Length: 264
Image (cartoon, rainbow, N blue to C red; front, side):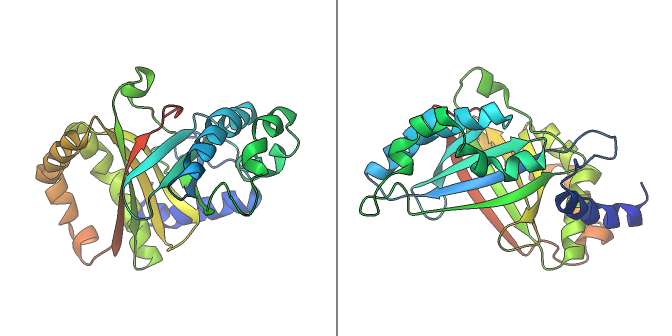
């Protein structure tokens, strides 16, 4: 693909896919997943257990029945506004993802399991607030990849990173950097690459969000040291196309740990 075509297609494909509720395709013809990242803002105390029980026994099973899977569920370990529970909802069909909450009202099995959470009184609410954002997978990484530790129920943590850009052009160039070398550099450094996505709806746009997996914080720091020292990374970030100005104006960096019921 010509560079000019890449720049125009990267943003246009996402917007048209959202408007038409059609399945986005990668350049290789593979379907690109959509993701909702949902945050449950809680208060320490009974809210946490009530919400955890709801997610594990009511919401995630219901979402799986709709075809939304695997669902990631995470505690926020390092980042603002704790306690917060994060959900990662991947789906191949945009209409399924955006209408999921409406479908829950017609799921009798869900309604029975969710009764305590859904009917919590105003004097003892189940949560403080819920917010979410909608994303589409990068062309070059069209589907979520589970780390090996998930299947083994092994120890693992995740890093959720959001890169904000000062302009749409800068954002598209940052996305381009991933496709023109960063995926391979992450691979050489030994990262578990979970997903990469453009934000379609959410705060502080334009931005992209991606997730990486590690055994623990020591493993995280060692792999980032290896990444930063990679000669190809040094060359890529200093190239005239990407190094002529700051194309990332702010980075949000969260450390998450999976809940016992997480499917990621």
